[in-house]
Amino acid sequence: MKCSAISSNVGVEVKDIDLNDAISKQDQQTLQSLLTTTGLLVIRKQNISPEKLIEFTNLFGEIRAYTRSNFELNNYPEILVLSNIVKDGRGVGSPVSGRVWHLDGHYLDEIPKATLLAMKIKQEEGGNTCFSNIQAAWANLPDRVAAMAENLNIIISRVKSREYNYPERGPATEEEIKEWPDVTHPILLSHPDTDRIGLGAGGNVPWDIESLSKSEALPLITFLQEWSVRPEFTYEHIWQEGDILVWDNWTVLHKASPYSGERLLHRTTAF
Ligand SMILES: [Fe+2]
Image (tube, rainbow, N blue to C red):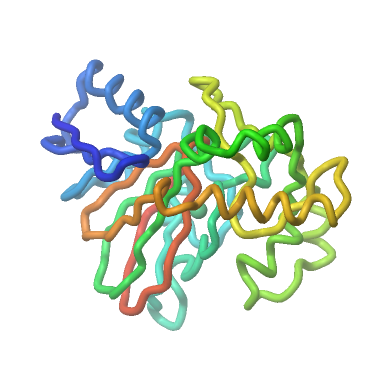
């Protein structure tokens, strides 16, 4: 197994590994440590079964599906299918998701540790996925802004995020509003494994900040969110069929970008 950096602040490409083979204890530890230190593993040219993807996911935490979905892979409820492919008049996967910068499951009390995506079919143009290192963003934040952000909590509202993430679905229903209580998280996210601080201001939704008025919160949250994704903290992944990406959801924000043509990915999440 060999590794090489892919950008100045995010990620590493792992080479000379076939995930169909057993991974030695030492390589397992290297992968876990590279994930927490670089935020993203890129592993190309893999062709693995759903069972192997589940086994590999469990290396980074406990696999758990947290989105209620009609697009689980048959017989594998832990695997979510993301795809625009339509078969017999029905979409085989969730066609769009993650179009704005976000942490996966930021709206949960327990933010997931890692997300995995496996590109199974790719015939599209575009569709790159972007990542930004929020620990680098925090480390480089000007002191006067850092002092303002310390000890503050943001209020993540899944209801409010709907119009940013899924404008085509219309506003949240009464039932969804009842099911989706707001959650609060510190803006300074302390990584559960390393205690390293990341700038957890979220992506594009202008979240409220606990104990601040709207007029105080909006300029601050806008600044922090724009700072979080400055080009020097980011990496843009151009997909190839067979790619497997693992990202540390406490270390990087991510977002999808538009594409045309067919594609299909399998997604899993580890807590
Ligand atoms: Fe996502």
